[in-house]
Image (cartoon, rainbow, N blue to C red; front, side, top):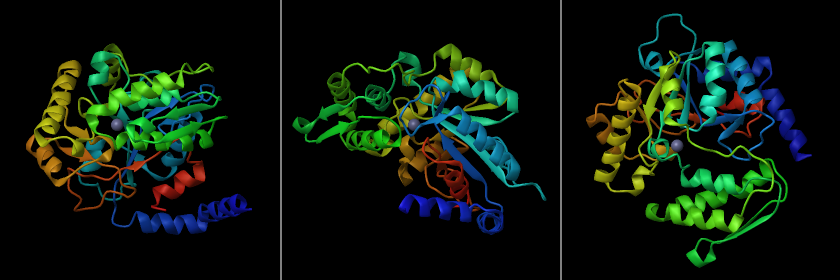
Length: 327
Ligand SMILES: [Zn+2]
């Protein structure tokens, strides 16, 4: 009953007369919209992770966006809007997961779609997925997995059985608990969870970083702007300012060397930022830095903390459309 009511409300809000008003209100003053995605998989390769969008959902979202926005590069969105132009929207992708090469690159080439990809560089160098990707990989499938981290003071969880959104709602709290642990412990704790989970019984295409060659090919696309996302994907407000500065600068230096392009944009890992970090980004000469906050970019927002709306696997199209208008 509750679900049915929710569906009814969603349908009402996204029907033409009301949605048109909501859209007009949201887009008054010509704000820019920046969306934050992570990666894509074909529908036949299920991965229960908020960051993994089904390819068919992504295509449907692009079709919906084309009706009401000009999808532009980040630089175009930051430049003054030309009079009479349609609302501007930017597609950004965080981290540098391999699905961007395998599945996003063909779409943007075919659809003439500008995108910005923020790459964290350590995983590209080592080929080893970050700790949170390793944990998500370990907890896939349909079976039941018991994870006991109580000896570490983190608690115990059961994941499964079954897959889909319920499974993700069991995986999410484990990731959040690890994020709250000291940064130096993340890898060790993740390895413990991977060992407890054992091998995944079902065939999955695990989350993994792009290779350096794939990153170079992606960067060579005229549709792609590469931005930096730190070196080790550290949550930058959890480490010292000199460490944060070194991580930011190293990711830019490596990306500039790999791509032969100036790297002018940055995204804070997990969206975690502080005024001190904003000052570092400005001092290093970045043209912009993006955070995660469910609202549109308004005149007066500082370039070093531009809001982005995070889009994930479990937003059906009506929900996606409502999030675009700030609901
Ligand atoms: Zn990230």
